[in-house]
Image 1 (tube, rainbow, N blue to C red):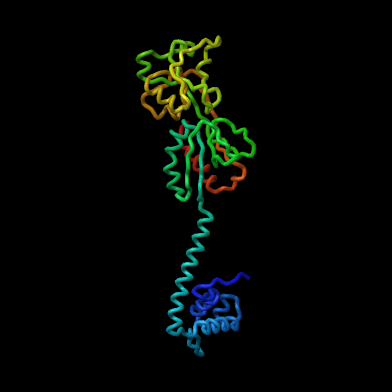
Image 2 (image 1 turned 90 degrees about the horizontal axis):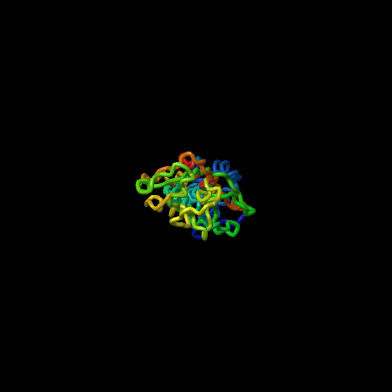
Length: 305
C-alpha cells in the first residue's frame, strides 16, 4: 500500500473516510460503500478527532450528526475531493488528447502552397500540438529526428521508416496568358524548341524525379532548348511562369491557384508524382502523428490534385 498523502498535516485517507461517513450518516453504511468494517471506520474517525482535538460527530442511536466543527471540515473535504476528481479527469483526458511537439517536413512547393493553407484548421482542432513546419527540398534525416514526419515526393529509401501513400500529384505544361500573347502557344512538343523554358536548377536537389522532362520531350536528338531561368524550387517556377517569363511543367494543384496561367499542350501525357507520408518506426504509436496523418488524408480527399 502506498504511503498516504498528507493535506495540511491530515491523512487524506481519513478525510475520505470522514466524508463518506458524513454522507452516509453511519459507520455501517459508510463501511459498506468503502468495503471496510464498521469497527475500522470507527477507529479512523476516532483517530481523526484525536488528531484535530475536536468532536466531528454527535453520536445518537438513530445515527451520526455533524458537529459545527464537523460541518466546517466536511465542506473543506468535499471541496478538496471535487478538485481531486477534476484533476484526475483532466489527467485522463490529457492522456487521450494529442499534445506535444510535431515537426513536419515538406517540399517548398507543396508546403508553401497547399500544406500551409490547411494548418489553420489542424491547429484549431488540436491546440495542444506545438506545430513546426520545415520547408526544404533537401531530405531531412527522420532517423536522427531532424523532423518527426515528412511529406515526400519520392518513395523513402531510408530504413526504419513507416510510409503511407498520401496522394498522386498530376502535372501539365503551363504558360501565362501574357506569354502566349507575346510568343504564341506551342501546338506540339517539338515546337518547344522555339519557346522559352523555365526549369529546375541543376545545382539544387529536385523534389521529384525527372523534374526537367520538358528538355527531352519530343527532342530525340537532345538538341539544346532555350532555358531562360533555372529556379531551385517549384513555387519559384510557378511565380516565374505566372509573370510571363516562360513555359514550365507545374503540378496542377499549384497552377489551379492562378487565373493568369493555362495549360498548353494538353495532349502531352500527364506526368504523375506519388507523394508519401512517412515517419520513424519508433513513433508508430504517437497520437499526434496519427491525428495529423488522418487529418491529411481527409483534406487530400477534399482536394483535386
